[in-house]
Amino acid sequence: MTHSVRIRMRRWHRSAGALAAIGVLLLVVTGMLLNHAPSLGLDQRPVRADWVLDRYGIQIAAPMGYFVAPFWISVSGGQLYVDANAAGTLDRLRGAVTLEGMIFAGGGDALVVLDGAGHRIDQLDRASLPGAIDAIAASADRVLIETGELWHASDSSLLAWTPSAAPDAVTGARPLPVSLARAVVADARSRQLNWERVLLDLHSGRLLGAWGPWVVDVFALLFALLAVSGFWLWLRSRHRPRA
Image (tube, rainbow, N blue to C red; front, side, top):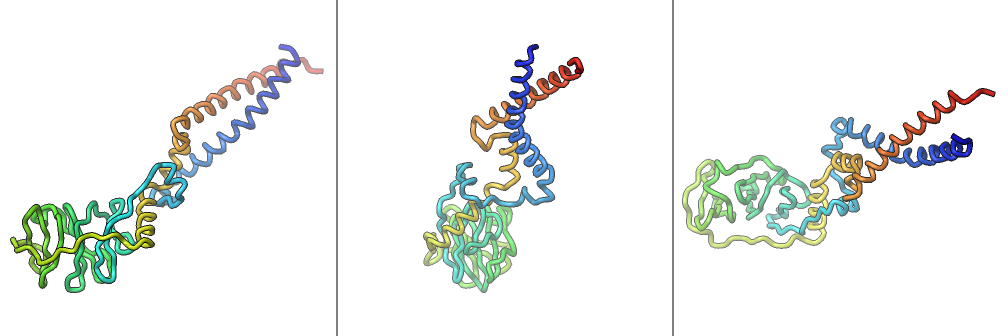
């Protein structure tokens, strides 16, 4: 091979190496972080950056809620909220009432019990309920729930339910105050994605969209070519006559 070809090969090798360094650095940093993701808590750390959430197309509609003085009770993104504070998971919310200093909120197959400060203290699942909850009300010292077209009243310990007449009034859901709705949506939205998932997608290139994995493949091919060209240049330098 001529001297000019060797010079061009060395120039290409240096230029390609500089470009490949970007990919190497990205893979090394994301790889190291992923290896220690559990200890760093990345699998539990929600993403609050709007541009990242927008990249994933994560959108949550403003929830409706129930005002149980002094709190607003709502559900967003599978989370039960007392004002803007998450209080555990709940798929659906069909009502919320206060009774004897306690708050009862639920829907579907779950009835959640909160204390007067809005802290979750208990939950009744489908096995402890007469059916799926369509509405909740309170009458005297009893919690009432509607299942289908039937109303049921609880005993004082919430262990037994008996058929009951429909309550005089049932409070419907209302839009949350604008500032509160924004805070609830922002928190619920962030809980749909954690930083471990973002790093995994960045490491594989999927964060860049449909072309992302191809970009990573190009870098991998570039690494291979650099290894081959570097080995070839090393061999040529060993066999070159010494001055």
